[in-house]
Amino acid sequence: MFKRIVIVLVNTMLLMLLLISVVAAAQDIPTNITAKSADPISLSPITDPVTVITVTSGTDPDDSNSKTCYTDPVGPPGPPTTPCTLRRAIVEASALGPEARPILIRFDIPEDPAEGYDPVLDVWKIELYATTDTVELGRLKDGQVIIDGSTQPGGRSDGPKIILLGPGTGNKDGLVVGDVAGDNANEIRGLAFQNFRVHLYVNTNDNIIENNWFGLSDDGTEPVLRDDDPENGTGTAGIDVLSAGSGNLIQNNVFLGFDGTAASIRGEDNIFQNNLVGTKADGTIDKQTLPSLICTEVDWLGGGGLTVQGNGSQVLNNTFAGVRQQIFAISTQPSAIVVAADDIVVQENIIGIDSSDTKVGVCGRAIYLAGANDPEDSLVISNTIVNPGMSGISVNGALANGNTLWSNIIEQSNQWIQVDGNALPETAIQLGKSLPDAYELFNPAQVTEINGTSVTGSSGVGSPCPNCLVQVFLDDTDLVTETLQFLGETTADASGNWSLTLPFTLSNNQGLRTTSTSNQFNVIPGMRAGTTTKLSLLYTTGGSNGGDYEVFLPFIIR
Image 1 (cartoon, rainbow, N blue to C red):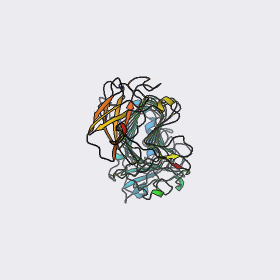
Image 2: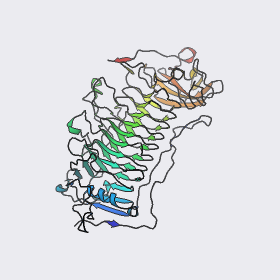
Image 3: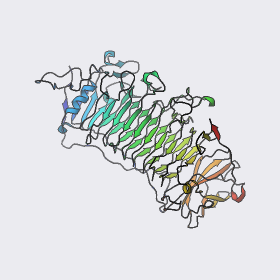
Image 4: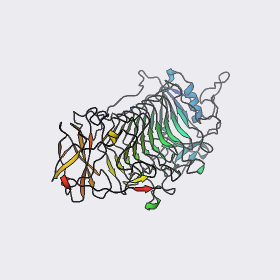
C-alpha cells in the first residue's frame, strides 16, 4: 500500500536563505589599498516542509506529465496512480499550490532488485524512461521543492544512495531546477546523475545543489561515458546555471569526465564551493606516471572544468585535479577555471593536487581570466596551483582591468611550454597580448638588496609605482618561473621604495620574485586601482644590485 501525502502545517514557515557572511582572506589587506574580499554565502536548507511526498518505487514505467503519486488528475476522484515514482512525485509537486510549500520529495524504496536495488553497493538505481521530451525529469515549477536522496532509509554512507540513469546515448537533459522567474529556493541533494547531456539546468534564484555526483560510476571510481565514447565524455555539463539564475549555492558535489564543462555559471552572485572537479568520489585520480603519457589519450579523463560568466560570483575552496578531455592533440585542453565576467572571487582553490596530496596537475591553464568585455575587478587570491599544462594564471582581453592576483602559490615541475601559434610562452602569471601594452609591459617592484632576512627594493625599471602593494614570493634557481611560497607583503612609499623582513634567510639556490598592485587609477597607465602586475625576474643574493636572473627559451609544442 502506497503512502499517502503528508501535510504538515507549521505556525511559522521558515523559508530558508539565511546569509552568513564569512571573510576568508589569506592575509591582512593594507587599508590604503583598494581591494575586494571573499564573502561566501551559506544557504540554510528547508527543515520544516509543509508537504512530504514519498517515492516508494525505483521504477519509471512511463513519461506521463499528468500521473501523480497520490491524486488522479483525470476525471472524477479516483485511486492514486501506482507506483509512486520520482517522476510522478515531481509532477505532483509541480501541481501543488503555494499553501502546500515547501515540499519535500523523500525516498523509501524497498530493498528489491525489481525496484533498482543493488545489494552489493547498497544503492537504488532508477533507469529513466526514454521520453520524447528534451528534459528527462521535466521542470520543477513554482519553487520550494526539495529532492533529497539522503532520506532513503538504509543504503551506503559513502555516496548517494539514489542513482539516476538517463536513457540511450545520453543526449537528454536531466532536470530543470526552476521553470520560470519566481520558481526559486529549490534543493537538490544526495543524488547521482549518469548518462545525461546537461545533468542539471538551474534557471532561477536561491537554489541549493549539494552532495551530488555528476558523471561518476555507481561506485564513484571512474567516469560513465555517453555511448561508451571518451570523446562524448560523461555529458556536456554537470550543472548549467542559466543567466536568469542568481544567488545559487553549489557545494560539496563531485564532477567527472565532461566533454564540455563540469559546471557553467552564467547567472550573477552564485557560489561554487567545496566541490571536487575531475576526480573520483574520494578526491583521487589514477594518473599516468610516465611523463610521455601525461595528458595523452591514455591518461585520466577528468573532463572539463568550471566556467564563470555571471558577475559577482565566487569560486571558493574547490579541488580541480586531472582535468583533461579527449580532444585532438592540436586542440587546447580546458582550463580548470575560466573567468569571463566581472567582480569574481576565486579563492583558496587547490588545482593539480588530489586528496591524497599527489601532484597530478591539470592539462590546460589553471586559472584563465579572459573575455571580450571582461574580466574586470576580480580577485584571485590564495590559490594553490601545481603542474598546469599551460599557465598557472593567465589574464587576457582588451578590456580586462582592475584584477587583483594575490598570494597564489604556483609550482611547475617542467619548463613552461609555448604553444605553437601563441605569441607568448606560458608561465606562472601570464599577461596576454590582447591587454594594453602599458599594462603588459609594466614592470613589478624590483629588489635592490637582500641582506640576511632584510630586503629592500624600489619600483620596477621604468614603472613608477607609488604606494603600491608589493608581494614577495620564494622561488628556486631552476630556471622555471614559480611562486613556491608567499613570504610577505608591504606597501611602498610615495617614491615607490619599500622594505620587508623575510621569515628566513635564503639559501644559495633560492631567490625572490615580486608582484605590485596599484592603489589608484592610472598608476599602471589606463588601469584601475587593484590591478596586479606580472611576476618579476628572479632576484638572488649573488646578483648585481642584489639581483640576478636567467633567461631561457620556452619549449615549443608543434
